[in-house]
Image (tube, rainbow, N blue to C red; front, side, top):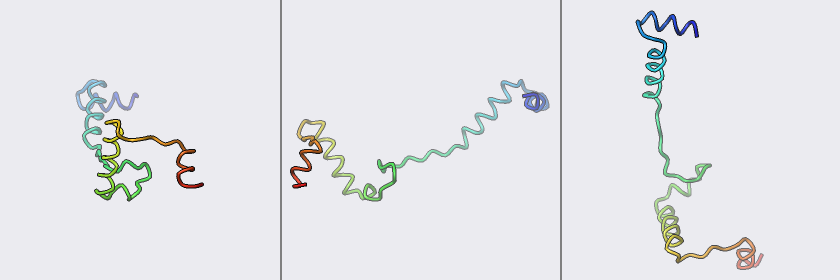
Length: 81
């Protein structure tokens, strides 16, 4: 902390102002990347616009009450497992 105080004084700034300047400069260099792929593992299946359109339609249908949620037991039964 003493080293920061010396550096701030050398620039004619208060310690608070010196630290704020450093934090603002650092924040301005942070690159934010928005990935449309909802998969935590980055599954390339979700990169296909047709697949994502299908997912979005399914979400809209569920929100509109037009879909059905299946339990794992129901899925196994439907698949004959």
